[in-house]
Length: 320
Ligand code: SAM
Image 1 (cartoon, rainbow, N blue to C red):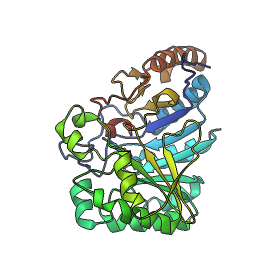
Image 2 (cartoon, rainbow, N blue to C red):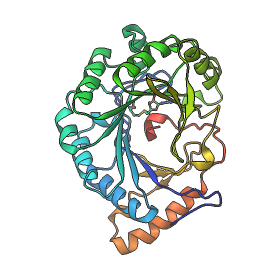
Image 3 (cartoon, rainbow, N blue to C red):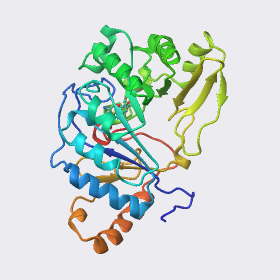
Image 4 (tube, rainbow, N blue to C red):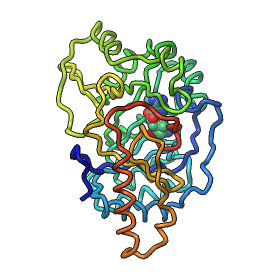
């Protein structure tokens, strides 16, 4: 097992199936252009091969399917069904939810138990302004369909001071009513937000969130698993919410994440632009592939930072 001097190792793999997305969220996509694939994206078969060998070489036990939006690519069905056959402890999926109704059958067939759905507002006008694509009611119907299937859902919201901070309580109520855990993600300095005045103007901190929530509910801090990125809070008799507080309470020193982009690059750290191409290795027979992959993983682990500083990498390329 490859472990660094802080005791960190890769356990959690995030696979971006495609860079294409049917949204162009203001904080993620600077030019507002949707549905741009990366050049030379790997096929579902190649991505599954990559996962199989990464699991063996690094000891991956948790996997998250992400994007772009993973549901927009024809690869989705084959990859989801394939990955659910692998001996992983936990497989989850992150999506904006726009295509959940269309993918309901394959999701049910796969047996996946957990979904994270990104939803920044329940207000139709602000939804259009923020996501710059899709339709709010379609997402809400998708969420209902997933709850009917008995799938455990978390909703991810990125609160922005001037765009959707007023939606914090309505979204929290919506989630508490449905037994859904809401996760607030503090805005990260990624892509066009790195060193930008927009980041400073829009950043809505964990302290600000807790002020807003505290005005309505009593809450207390509760447990989170060792390598969880979220600080979790319980509202007695109502439910739980979490905050992924990259800036206010960074979790870099216990990070176990490894990212694979749709065009075959491994990223050891979200806060580093360094990446290693493994698309060519995937053609090798296992006895050659595995030792070479170990070398690449060692280098990727060395890229892990001890503090989050942001990066020029656009989130939709590596899936957050
Ligand atoms: N399309 C899928 C979705 O919407 O969940 C998966 C990819 S998306 C890049 C993953 C998550 O990253 C979303 O919850 C999104 O809100 C979040 N995200 C994107 N850019 C971000 C930023 N600069 N700061 C914080 N979160 C960001």
